[in-house]
Image 1: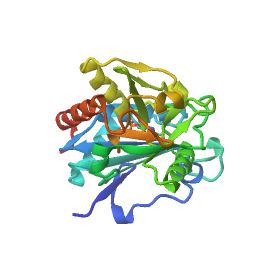
Image 2 (image 1 turned 60 degrees about the vertical axis):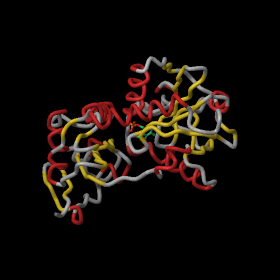
Image 3 (image 1 turned 120 degrees about the vertical axis):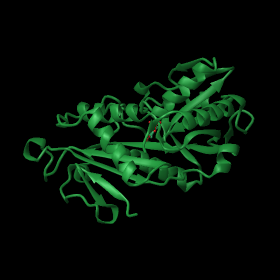
Image 4 (image 1 turned 90 degrees about the vertical axis):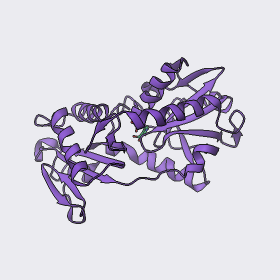
Length: 293
Ligand SMILES: Cc1ncc(COP(=O)(O)O)c(C=O)c1O
């Protein structure tokens, strides 16, 4: 069966799917996006992802009048159904419209919604047992007064790509990004948590991190396990001296991080709180989500 891609109401074969040359997302990074996981026929926290997509678009003043949570959800589910997509990744992008030139008043501002499905393997399974190494990147996250970190927009990701290349250059599993003040923001594609003396802490979005859906899931699961979670500004010292550290993201799920900049974090192996949350997360993703069949 040939896979299809949804483009503004039409399903086209993946091999033939294309965008106009002057799509504003392509020209200027003038788009918003989401990545969603499907586990065992259920899309994990689909509505929070779609709400974030629509809020990102609203914050950027896209003309989203015809797009609702219900209509986007229906398009996502239909794409999964047509692709028989019971396991893997869904990519949803929404660009402002089509036309050359920066000025939105000079382009066709009908947003372009594209939905595709993929298989996904980010980290090898053994890294969930051994943990990732990290380095601090020279590339910083943009200041929140330039672009609100809660907006998941395509154009912002050039910093994340540059930071990821810094991590790759030294063979690290992930790169940690700081904000302009030197506080920890997030990893290049994941949120960061530390565990110290039985308490979990993670930076607030105002520090420059995405308000991650997996981050929220980890906070919910920690709450259910009776482990307190605080949002607070963290420094590199806090990560170097933590008992445990882990990252969260749709692609990475919950993954331990065991060193940063050649400092061993805690025992150098995934700690008990991280392991407990990984187990709880796996149980949670196996049971919850919007059916896609
Ligand atoms: C920069 C960045 N931070 C954090 C995350 C994790 O967010 P989520 O759990 O919603 O996937 C992502 C992935 O979407 C990301 O790209």
